[in-house]
Image 1 (tube, rainbow, N blue to C red):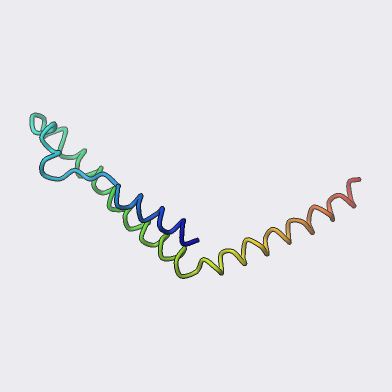
Image 2: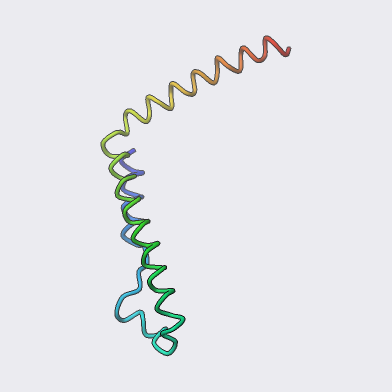
Length: 88
């Protein structure tokens, strides 16, 4: 799980955001460009916040997630066996 947490952090760090120098292509069309920049940055901020939450879950609760996945896998195996008994 820690490897996944590192991957999420790397994705968060590489999330693009329009600031300063990279606004130059949009300088000629501020009426169109600025709302786009605001919306794009809002999405980037939301992703960054979500990545922080996901990284925290993977880091702090990775073992619980693995146990839960094991429990669901076992329950699914039992369910499949029961279905096979009903429908041979």
